[in-house]
Each structure stands twice: as C-alpha cells, then as structure tokens.
Length: 93
Image 1: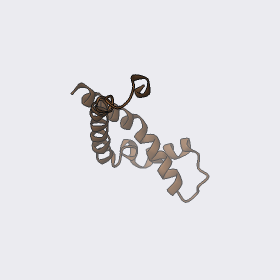
Image 2: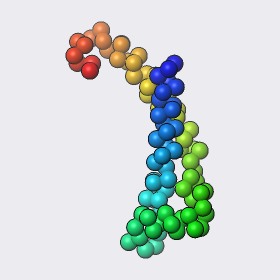
Image 3: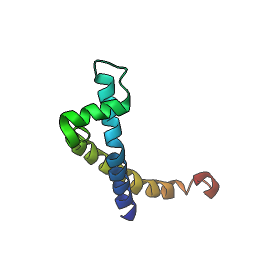
Image 4: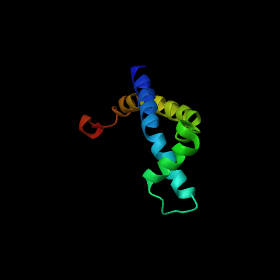
C-alpha cells in the first residue's frame, strides 16, 4: 500500500511541476508565429489568462497520472516477486 501511495504522490508531483511547461510548449506549437520563444509565450499566456492558462486541463491529466503511478508502483513489486521464482536475484536488479 505504501508503494501505491508513493506512486500516486510521484504522479502528482511530476504533473504539478511539468504541466505548465507542457502547456507553454503546446501553445508555442499552435501559435500562428512559430518562432516565439517559450519565455515570450509564457508571458503572452500570463497576460491573457493569468494562472489558468498554465493549468487548463490539469485535473484530467492529474487523475490519469495518479492512477497510473499507483498501479505501476503497486504492481512492480508483486510482479518482481512472481518472476523471482524463474530468475536469479542478479537478473532482477
């Protein structure tokens, strides 16, 4: 259960930190003038919508990331032990 919680927390942390950068990147690609630097795009986004511009659609992405992290971390150890019967310890890492 601790691994599932750790996976969820990892997903939450990563999405919170990197989602604004991804939003800037997407807006840069969609923007009419494609030669806009990321810093300039962040400034344009901030002027138009303030904080909301960087976290639009965040909750949907967050739910998926938290669920994925929880399942991945929880199942990793279980599968590792199941495969332990068929492999040596040095192969498992």
